[in-house]
Image (cartoon, rainbow, N blue to C red; front, side, top):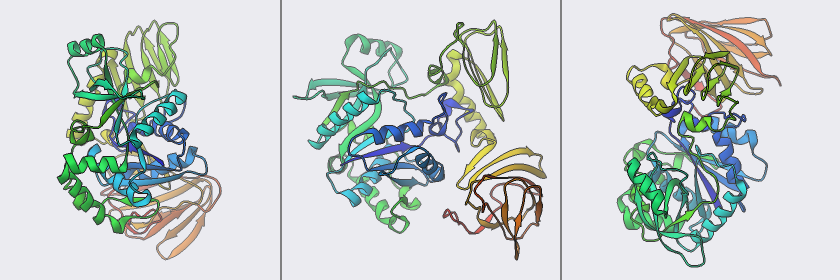
Length: 475
């Protein structure tokens, strides 16, 4: 049995301002309209003998991830989720994933580990390589996929291959090399036998847990204690990882904890294409250039400009006389950079975090289990939002201590609980929610409910909310 394990974490800081902490790059829509997470799910389900996919992600991304799954998957496959309270690197994630899979399917299940932020287009070669990796994994090997380098790259780790495994395409691993200097990267290309470390793996549950027992016994004990502590938070569909015991697990990658120490580790040279979409330069390569080398997403006019990448979500962007520039325009933040400097975007995000600036974490439009809200204006003592509620969905029964709210329905019909009253509010009608009143908004219709919310008060933070009942387990 092959169980794809999708690792969906990390903020993708090099792709700010589109990627944010609350909306990481796995949810970004590419030029073709699909997100990286959608493509990863499709790739996982294209493999043979897959009836279940386990996603390991942050608790805050659960509902968005589930919506992505249901938006593009077919019947016959089951999504399951392992929800982290905070990031703890790949070793704890895969250890807990192995324990979860063992509880359902036993020691012989084969785990196919797929980071959600990679792009692979050639499915035929991908499926063939997965089959080869699964065969090696069933023999007890820990398999890692190596990517044939196309150029000297100092931003990736490398794997050095040694002797060939008989009757297979795999090689024993002769060593893992951290991100090398440019000179070393060039020497690896000349020497051959060196591959980019993709962070993709294949192994049985038993082989992985035995490797933890041999090379990281304390980590294994911590993971088993965390798994047992999480028992009351498990359902058939998802498991909330216990926060207290999870915080005690060592924060370490699977490479450092296991792969670099294991004697049964194999690198399988991948035949499929691969990109980690780790920068704006990498993402721009997915867009066809015009006759001047410009690549554009959105409404763009270029005059006497060349070799630029411009992405705009909501408005026209015009360039004049630019060369080798990257321009990314979102409703609340604008990035302008030389193409060869885009790796420094993470320094921008670092400064935003230090200032506690909202744009490092959230977009103006924020996804919620019930739909989305968009902040139209925020002026200290009042805030205006556009709220969309999916058919059949509802917000929690809640109250606010510091703000009142005025709701105006502009499309659809709302069922509203306001204090002791319940009412239907139709298009072009409104209702007022005083501070301290219990209230709830529901869409009882079959079309999207759209309304404008006007908040007034001395504090308008999103944490001024007390939930009494919630359909999504957020009380």
